Length: 454
Image (tube, rainbow, N blue to C red):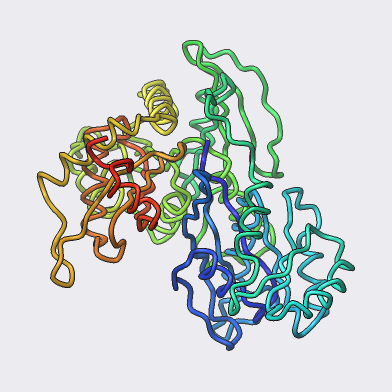
């Protein structure tokens, strides 16, 4: 079960980024009175009584970006809303109810996840009564807060936690279909691949229209394993997206990636990779999806080009996905198609793997002994313990003395070590560095705290 996500949304200048920093107790997002400062989504991990959730900051709804990035900002907001388990709709008590607040609520029409109406900037208790006018919006539980005066933070955290999906410690992956998104540029052979799956000696259960008009779900079995293949429209370069059909085709392909358990990223053996490929791979990485690079039409070059050359080429093009497996197939004839699907099932299993805290800490202790973190401001940062808090993707929280002291390079080293020594060898791993709380430090001094040796 993935870590639940909580998205902060609202019009510009209601204090969304201030709320994000306040809840995180760290200055992560830029806060400025100028509209449009926040463009990309920013995330951080929040813990409350052993319950973790990802908090997502978003740009202001309704702002026209000065650098002509309005559509990109809107897309980031839409993605945050689509993935959220809980939505924080932020309004400003001091300015009162504005027409743009009503537009934001209209944009949330049809969203069925819990909404919490956060009336920010209620700096004094007497201002709480002014928040009542926001009840006219008709969405969510209303709570007043002040990020500057530190009012009602714990109350808001509790309201969020109460609305998160129920935590099931004994959750077992269901025997339902594993969803495979087949993505790539136009004419790389995606539909041919799906047709090969459907027309060979597999038992087709159904072929139905997917949740979007031009994505088709094909359900089939291989050796008793049930799959759901999501055939997607091919992506074009951004400057080539000129019609509504092309725009929504791109949007639906991205949605298919979000729906998928594993993604098959298709390449044409006769073509070099393109900017579109890199954008799509970036989108897959952004959503932490297990992926297999599939080089199709291999029969046309296999006598002239060794597989090692394509492997080296793809590794060079996508250096941050060095762990992703690479397959060479001929979709039209079915060559290696079954092997790809079997490997996809392996990735799905890896993404669902969970390791004990004891095993994780033994592996982490070995990594630190092999390569301790570098000195930071005259001191060597300490890593106290780690725990896996979620799956799909495997998500690990490392408690340390100072997250800033552990560089991105060192964090990549730890992820690589875990990938080599834990059952996550070919899937993304989320790693969060968290500063140990005072209560945990006190517990350790008294001999009751957790450590790498426990």
